[in-house]
Image 1 (tube, rainbow, N blue to C red):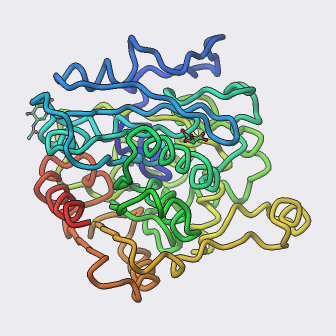
Image 2 (tube, rainbow, N blue to C red):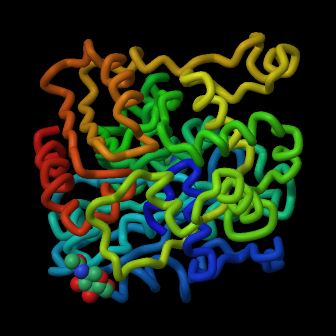
Length: 402
Ligand SMILES: *[C@@H]1O[C@H](CO)[C@@H](O)[C@H](O)[C@H]1NC(C)=O
Ligand SMILES: *[C@@H]1O[C@H](CO)[C@@H](O)[C@H](O)[C@H]1NC(C)=O
């Protein structure tokens, strides 16, 4: 689950584990008639947090465009002492959900580690994932339910999570995101959103510019999505575990003559430090439009709103013929940022991260911490058995002074 997530076309990973993934509601596209948003019996709190001896609360928030999303809160560590540090909002990446932060042992997983260190931990789950599949008027069988990309994750989901946590706790929070969870924050921050409620942001495997990605399967996936976008938009929901989604993954393997069993490292890079006995990776669906949007970025290297590919359509949505850009240099220079990236990462690849760092070259030096991990690939940042010392300790040191 976890991190798999992350990445864009981690989709691909699914081949590996499609058969072992966690149960999802949408096999065969059949949703339960009442898709109860938060199931107290088998929700994340009950299955992943309380089982480890931690207190956990289920929360929900409705976005301005009607999506009903879930959040889990860990208000104290295993000692039972209430958090004495600010809230931290954790935002997972694509094809994943909040379980990203919980999958390893409590001493290795960021969610538990933050709770044990006195932080008030909030785990977000974006629209379309199994614990955030509610809507005030639509349901996941409706095409309209899937009419979104990361523009909406940054513009609606993130603000709803942040506002909810701020309302509930009365405190400004730190943010930590992995992969697409970093793009959501970068996009919001570049527009000056949420600054008054955030103390800082920690970005693991930052995704911003994407045109130098090195993974062949990812590049091929992007080409296929762009070449056939009309067809793919018709699919609307992209579930890598079933139907068109899993066929797509197979097609990529076949075209490149790859063994799907190796795809995880071909897409995310050779992760150094995963626990080999934790092979189960669950995958969450996403909107096909989201994948097309990411494909546009892989092709162009630009960070902009979704391109409808037609000046008239763009005019209709944006009042201008080309999609408005997200300008990274507009991120407030004094906003505290912690940015960590890996030398082996094939999604948040070195060259693209350099372009982002160049965008941030005027950032106040004492407000920007950059942590490079030579041996780490994309999943190591959420799944490595040594990520606690390698990444989370420095991250918490950064939180402490911001
Ligand atoms: C936060 O509180 C304000 C003021 O009470 C309210 O209008 C808003 O709907 C709340 N937002 C969330 C996401 O809880
Ligand atoms: C790997 O996972 C197994 C099963 O959950 C666990 O028993 C073991 O301690 C883990 N190893 C490391 C190095 O964390």
